[in-house]
Amino acid sequence: MKKLFALLLTLAMVLSLAACGGNSGGSDGGSGSGASGSKVIKIGIYEPSSGNNGAGGKKEVLGIEYANTQVNTVTIGGEEYSIELVPVDNQSENDKGVSAAQQLVSSGVAVVLGSYGSGVSMAAAPVFEEAKIAAIGCSCTNPGVTLGNPYYFRVCYLDPFQGSVLANLAKDEFSAKTAYVFTELGDDYSVGLGEYFTQECGRLGIQVVADQNPQGNTDMSGFVNAAKSAGADVIFAPCSTTVASLLIDQAASAGIPLIAGDTWDDAVILQAASKAGTDVYFSTFYDEGASDAAAAFMDGFKSWLNANSDKLSNNGGSDTVSAVSALGYDAYMVAVEAIKAADSADSDAIAQALSGVTYTGVTGDVVFDDEGDVDKNIIFIKGVDTEKGEFYSVKEQGLAQ
Image (tube, rainbow, N blue to C red; front, side):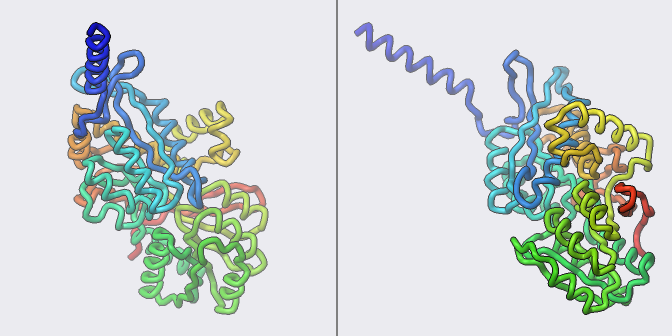
């Protein structure tokens, strides 16, 4: 009898502890206690660290991590909470992205940052909406990311604007009469930006010849020859850095300048263009000379990278600052501002507070509209100085007329 009583008592204690430590399923799962008993609020990082967009995803995460070193606590209800980052790898794939998003929900995050890649962002959007957890996109520029979803926000400009600006760049800087548009089949970002560029080319009277690269193809010679045969004045290639480096190398002999979107603001592009001697121009979200805050971010971020070999490796082995790192930094700071405005660890309360947040970031001012987008009306155009092996600022360009 005593053994039976002891067994029942032990079982009761185990069940009691499990009930106290379990997640009730409510939207206040983003808070808890750390090992030292301190209060903790979790911010999820929904980014690729593998797949075609893995290199870019790692750079975006670096900006988030650096921001966390600058601000790693927040006061809620008069109590100090430590901010814990919870990363998942969406593997640059839409189906894997859904599972990664569900993993973040299960881990009890209060808000999510990401993703590099519009397709995986759109794939995860319904998951975050159902869980009533706000997601803040850093560099996902396709309009579909936030459209109709009150829980998805972003701190970057959108592709209709970017496509318009780049088509005008082709006309103004290169007097383009024919543009060869090269996109990646199955990539929502690439295909979408290609379409917006093409639409604006039609308005400007630029003829477009278009091709799509099948997934996994590494031979760009056929596309380069097609561009030459079409008499293209520019090649517009909104593609991943993996594909871009191959295209840049094989396009060198064609003598046709390459124009691309924000994904090309990367050390991989700098290295490929410098080696091949190819003229490359791209749009980007960030310029270190745009403000004192932007310059301070660059200096602090570089020092932080160079102090940690693992971080430097995730940045491609150099301390070149990518725009997506600056966007990751801003997205994190906006999330902190939303938590402070909500004065709550409740994910839905944070989501509701986000729409009213205003923040002056290193990539510009953040003020959300009804769709959760920001009204950024300036794009920075950069090029590659192939002799010096460095990026240079070409111009700032606003809304196309």
